[in-house]
Length: 312
Ligand code: GDP
Ligand code: CA
Image 1: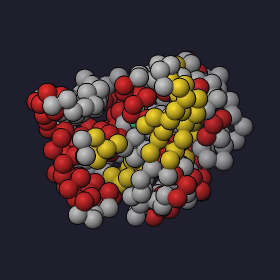
Image 2: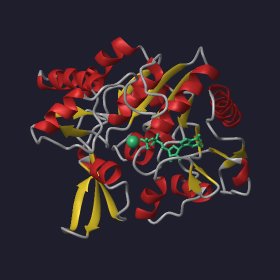
Image 3: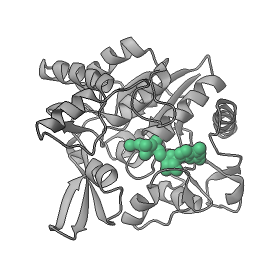
């Protein structure tokens, strides 16, 4: 079986681990969000790609959900001694190595997709991980800054430095309109038996991937099953509600289903607390959706595949 999943960071990566357990023989292609990518200290950092790579490759800090296990922060501390920041983005020593390799390869002319493949040669995540695009797409957020007035900032500055405490007036995917899907993205979707939306952020993860021209139409042609990241009117972790509010969508499993719509998503898994969700043209099933341990996560992935099989 060929499976394609569109993934953000933590929610996506954890779901993928369950998917591997539920379908060990499947050929899984992961299309990763690169809208969160940022250049820090001259290095290109791809948080969502790395979270998927480290999680599936056994290098993730499990408690945190991002970054490397056994991490130290000597380089960051030394940089701060020089007055060189930002100090708000946690880059550990081990993680720095990944970004140095990536930046060196990009500077030598390799596209991000080739760089990601090279990094995965080490981590062997057991899936084919492809960035959504080799072009630069950056998610920016317009805020009304109490000090500096209305301005657009990089998503990471809003998310990590400000903890989304200042409401987003709008979210702009800078460069998305001219971006091309990375080599292999459309081909993998076309060849897929099923496309899955893990419980990733529907606005700044899955929504960003779908904004790359050609991706939405390719996905819409397939059997698509999504897992709700919203349970009982709140995100399970993180601040996805702040992103939904920014685009005028209520934080509920119902509203996220409607945001995707029945033209795109055929099957929608919601938590038992949300069993009342109904969308015309969409098959909705309620299941325990907390990825509390590997078995529970595999059961969610199994339910998504079962629903896809029924709908195919
Ligand atoms: P990010 O890049 O770190 O934001 O990670 P993602 O975009 O992949 O996903 C974060 C989303 O995953 C949030 O909206 C969470 O509500 C959702 N999430 C996290 N853990 C769980 C879980 O156990 N179950 C479900 N259903 N959703 C979860
Ligand atoms: Ca992310």
